[in-house]
Amino acid sequence: LLALSIQGFINMFIVGLNTSILPLYTTNHIGLSESESAFGFVFISISTILFVYPAGRFGERLGRKYVMTTGMIITGAALFLMPFATHVGTYYVSMIINGVGVALILPTWMSMILDQIPSGNRATILGGVGTITSFGLVVGPIAATALYESVGPGSPFGIAGVLICLNAVFIAFVFRYHFEKHRSRRAEYRSAYYIDQTR
Image (cartoon, rainbow, N blue to C red; front, side):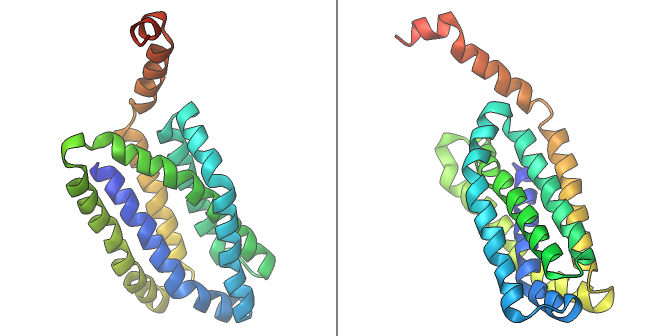
């Protein structure tokens, strides 16, 4: 649960990063107009909407951990690509890739959170997880602007990409038996004994 909360924090950190410095970066260093910069958020939203439902289905069939960590790596790749965006096309491609990664993360992350919470105190624990994740919205803009000014304009994207990829490895290690449990549970539900008992 702590590992998933850290993932939520990093997600919100990236949201804070994007909302605080991305328009400034695209305007000053890629040379986009304000409308072109804003249109990138349309692309990330559309790609998220298109992929979020299939991502949930893939999570149930393939294993949630694998779909979520794949989304984290895809999001990391989009962040690494951003400092190399030199024109509007590259910027839009990066935003679309980011949207696909977010779509893979969101439904599987929430379902894995719910898997870890006992039924008796879900509201309390979800409140705690929400506090941890929302803190990323506070830290993200502060850290992003500090890195932007002190290290370089592309550094916030690179550091955020490193963070989310490292956490993908961390999640894969912590839930290394999750897929095996998921597969055995599906096999149990399909067994003749289980079907007979539920009639």
